[in-house]
Length: 364
Image (cartoon, rainbow, N blue to C red; front, top):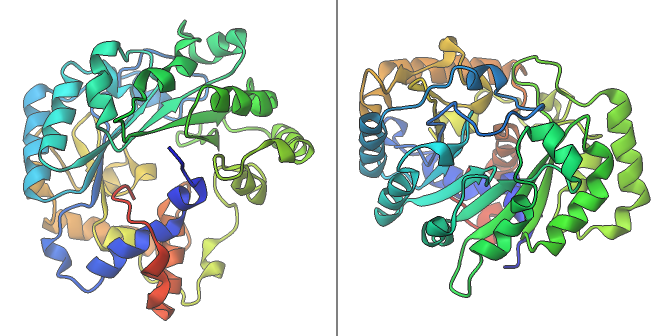
């Protein structure tokens, strides 16, 4: 399947949703996309894991809570659900049943997975997903074992041909977190992924959500920059994100104060204010942006205690929106994809015709 990664990752995919919702009664809107972190358990022990402390808790949402949330997402007309999380989503019993329930109700489903637990019996459900993002770690087996503590080296590259089928519409992409072990192999990892028939590969500098000192060092970032410049001609720029990496000097997100890029000083986070996303954690906490998962100051409720549809659009929900808007306006946000969505919305407000060439994407 032909994939233009720049469009897939562009902040402008937010615009059709923003244009539809910006003047709506926001208190009546359900979430556009929900990221379901239903377990903290994982079958790998990756050295770069940005959820390491959460993973140690080894908890997951019970079946009745997951089913209740799914029912509420359907009634709230949610467009897309990511199966993702601080753990590996496919380790949860009946994960395919939950995915089937969502899809049979018209909700698009995406899976972010390390792939180790995927089996042939899962193929039908996988082929009906919107996309599957498979984590790959290295094209060298020793490095793979060092990074993950796992023993499924070959499987990471076997999955695209296993999943793809003539009637398949799912995009099968690769995600590779660059860490202290694998960063020098970025070219050969890219080539291996392309030969394995992945539709694209995204390289992600390790992100340090928990201040665990897992980010690439300045010397390691310089090394990656030098490699990419030397081998730049090797890459198909429609199928990988190395241009973006070079622009950011291999940092996970831009290190500068984002407020300088706005035509009008930002007063609110558009993505939060139009109630675009929800993140549901394995402990039941519901959050509005990924970097704040686990921070009780920004939790709008707990699905282990209250139904999701009673949490969403509640008084507490509005209070957290106000708090997050204050943070965004003050330039305090980081490690958040919504920064680019806000930049796109800022330009759109001056020129609404910008939505004309945008491909709609329910996953924001």
